[in-house]
Amino acid sequence: MRNNNTLLLDTYDKLHDLAEVSWKEQKTRDFLCKELDKLGLPYETYPSHCGIVVKWNSGTLGPTIALRTDMDALWQNVEGVWKANHSCGHDAHMTMVLNTLRCLKEFKFQPNSGCLKIIFQPAEETGKGAQAIIKDGIVDDVDFLLGIHVRPVFELGMGQASSAIYHGAATLLKGKIKGIQSHGSRPNLGINVVDSLGAIISAVNSVKVDPTLPSSAKVTQVKAGGENINVIPDEAEFSIDLRAQTNKAMEALTESVMRAVQYAGEANGAEVQLEIRAHMAAAEKSPDMEEIVGEVVRQILGEKSLVQPPVTPGGEDFHFYTKERPNIQATMVGLGTGLEPGLHHPNMKFNLASLGNGVAILTASVIKLFEKKRDKLKEYKNDRV
Image (tube, rainbow, N blue to C red):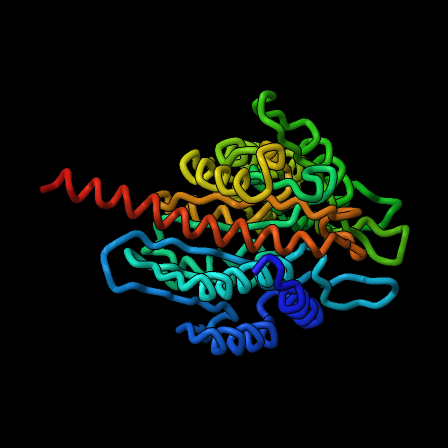
């Protein structure tokens, strides 16, 4: 399968051209369903979102091992044209997972003890796609979960791979301020929301948490006032971006920032409303899963190609699965692709030859996971006898 470049690149080109924004991945879903029909694999679709779940079941007792890929694209200005754009590599992820299924079929693979699930997940960019999958009970029976993500060249070089990606947690806050309008010559008769904004920015910048863990808090958007300079404005909006390397640190940071914003913003008598608009969970390490994937990377790409998992402040909703279902052991493969200039850049490019490496790693990881977990299940059964 690694040498079947024509099929691999054709799949990638089609998915790349079908780019659709979060929650609107209908054409992408339809294409994937047609490809799954060709493979003769059963799948389910859902009325509330565009996700697809393949359930390849042996009908015998055993672990449920799942592969997950994201489906959505970003809405971006690409060389003067606003459009849906796969600048985060989700087209590559779908291509690798779909071709992993093709590869497993060619190898006559059967999940002889257990079930293989393939989760095509919508709306990763909103931070809420994984939660929709969880809400539908799709991962309730999952024991082991595997994902993959293309990485920028400053993290992993072409031909390299990591057994995990240590994403940080991210929380996005949106706030509104209500004051009182007055004439610019009589500010004492009003409540200036610009004063509140200044106090809020200062307060957010002054928040400190555990210095041993990377974190940041910053105001990223402000809006206040109208066309007239001589009017004390009574309404404002603002946004805050929070980052922390662990979920525990994010909880502490969010609590501190929300408290600081309320106190500072309301000190002059204004009213402040603040809500969480989006949240991404941080990665939780799974040494067992990382060991298995690491063995596969060494076997396929060579000893020197396995590198330490990158630690990144970027968010990924893949990690909600383990946060909401702690029984799941999960890891996300980091794939070196020569990707430049960076993820989410409108002109992001990467070496398409890396897709074959990803398919090989995912295919071998699925097979090895079933072998190792089947052996552990046998040991468990023998101990019970």
